[in-house]
Length: 245
Ligand code: NAP
Image 1 (cartoon, helix red, strand yellow):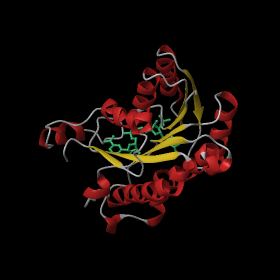
Image 2: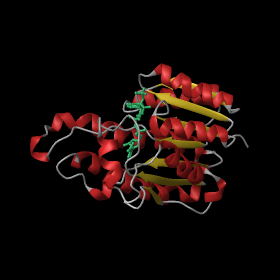
Image 3: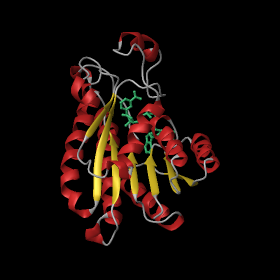
């Protein structure tokens, strides 16, 4: 059966690496979601095409419910019903101590890191669940080592958003386990992508247990495994990809 993969935030970083590794692993249909960086999304699409997948780029701000609905409807029409979903789109910030941050400044963080994951999973379940006439599927949510490290003094709010990912992931996994859907997450440590503030990779790498930061493709490898039939009895799990941190 053909696999139809949607990766939110597929134009850069962990999402882009996941799209490319999925194409190399033989996924037939891949949707590269992005918000504004069309050239980078097109580049990922080209890499997927070269690896033999049919790939499309779809612009959608997944923090907006209407955009999520449009994203999944577009995939229905152009590629077929989604069978695999990776929720990678995410942001860090605002930076600072809790006593320095205004509530309004947190809205984009909650709406992307939490609500977007929720609505994308909802749309996927409507298509995958045997309860809704689907044939099942697999979902991977991207959490962060921050959810247990806590980010004190820097980004406690980001850590809290990823704590919500962990709770949601565990609850949803149980909710849909009998409907042929597996839900898991990965929890990356410090990975060299454009989400990092300038200089952080160079500064933090040497003091990590493996004396280096991770690469996007190392996270993608864990995601591809969790999506695969090789992980057929794995659900509700969080896989740390954080180099013993
Ligand atoms: P990144 O390199 O900054 O890439 C972010 C991606 O998300 C881009 O493709 C961007 O699209 C997309 N995006 C941003 N806002 C969006 C929105 N509202 N709707 C749709 N797409 C949106 O980030 P990354 O490092 O790959 O991070 C991916 C995930 O891993 C995030 O959830 C992050 O919290 C998590 N994570 C990362 C690290 C790390 O060290 N890198 C560690 C732990 C967890 P455009 O290209 O169009 O802007």
